[in-house]
Length: 184
Image 1 (spheres, rainbow, N blue to C red):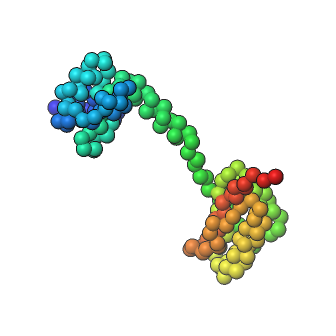
Image 2: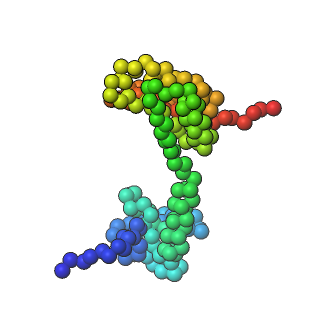
Image 3: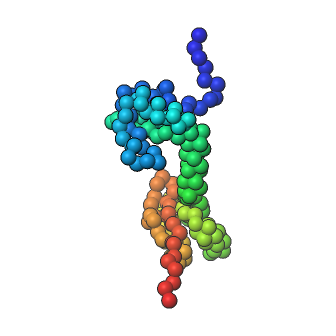
């Protein structure tokens, strides 16, 4: 009968009896003189004397690197560190704005205001002209429209990619400009 893992996550680190190397390098001790390479039995005894766990933190090193810590506290600190790093990440969002080759001035200005809002929020803007049916013959109009769009937003955005035709769409990619603080 096969054992079934019922949604339990496998432990990311080997501890105590799960460590299989003959020798281990111990780091992170209060007394730096005791850091070094020990046989596995001596390392386990050191951990038992301190009533802590021997945790393998770098299994691919030669010899594997271990630390003597309370395993639950160690896991808690690792999760806390991962959560902190995750919160510092910035997700780039690309907002799309669609034009037709015959877009008039009012619609253009309306969509321009939306693009300004998106750029101020820190999002990238992908503006495209969708050519439907026989309007593909007006490629120049589409390119002109996208270039006017980029020029109108030049104080808020920089052009990441000039107008490019892919299939029935011609698009341009704009990213927000990060302004440096004014020097007095």
